[in-house]
Image 1 (tube, rainbow, N blue to C red):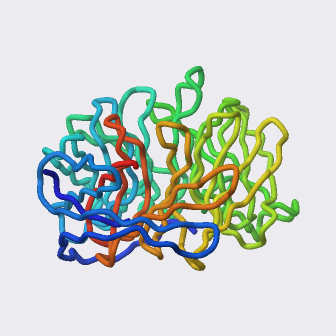
Image 2 (spheres, rainbow, N blue to C red):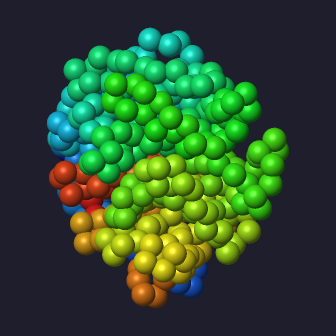
Length: 366
C-alpha cells in the first residue's frame, strides 16, 4: 500500500514543517446547508496508492521544508512537482516510486508554477529570481532571465500548438523603463516578449493595479489568466491584445484557472468557484464554498468533467455538484496538509501538492 493519508495573491514563500501522519477512520456526516462532508481512511507507507473510494495516500518529499507547490502530468507519465521553498523540481510515478528531486543551481530559487512545454520539457517560473526555466525528464536545467530580476513570474502554460511557445504572468516586468505587470511569451529557444497589462479603469501604468496570477490556454486558443489586482478574468491573443472581464464579487482574489469541457473556464476565488462562458464572454456563476475563509487554491476536472477544488485554509478537497451548486467535502483530518495545486493523474486518481505536510498526495475519487 502507498503512503496514505486520509483527508476527507501571488507567490509567497511558506515555511512548513514535516508532520507525523496516522491512520484514521471516519464516517459520513452532514455539514452546512448545500454541502456534505465525507471522511475516508488514512494510511502511511511507500507503495502504490490506495484505490479505495475516498482514500488518500501521502508520499512525503525527502527535502525538509520543500513546500511542494505545482503539480502536472509529465510527458513520461510521471507526476512532476515544484518545491517553492527549496528551489527544486521532482517527480513521482503513479505507483509511488521512485520520488526524485532535482535542485536548481540557484541557491535562492523559488520554483513555482509548472507546465509541459511543446518541446516535452517541464517549464517553470522561478519567482524569486525573475527567470523562466525548464528541466528535462533527465534532470537537466536551463533558465532564461526576464527583463527584471524582480519580475515575480507566477503562472505558466503552453500556448496553442501553432504558437510553439509558452506564456506566463509577471507582476513587475521592466518594459521601456517602466516596472509594470505583464503577460510574457517565451519560445523554447528562450526569446521573450512581454505585453503590459493596463489597469481595468484604463488608468496610467505608473500606478498599476494588476496582479496577474495563473494562466491557461483556452479552447479558443487564447491565453486566459486571473488578475487579483484588477479582480478580473482576462484573455490575451497571440498578437498580445488583452481583454478584461470584471468579476461580480468585489476583491474576490482569483487565482487558479482551468479550461472546462464546454467552451468554458473555471476559476477560483478566495472562497468560491467561478464559471466563465467563452461563447458569451460572461461570468455566469460564482459558487461559494460553505466554509468561510476556506482559501480555495487548486482546481482539476475529474474523469467525468466534474470540478474539484482544494481548500488551503480549511484543509480539504471538495467536489462541485451541478446544477445545484452545492459541494461534497472531504476533510484532511488535522494533519496540516494545506492542499494546494491539483491534477488528474493518468491512473484516474486526483493528485495534489500538500505544502503543510511537505508531501505529494493522491485521492481515489468516489
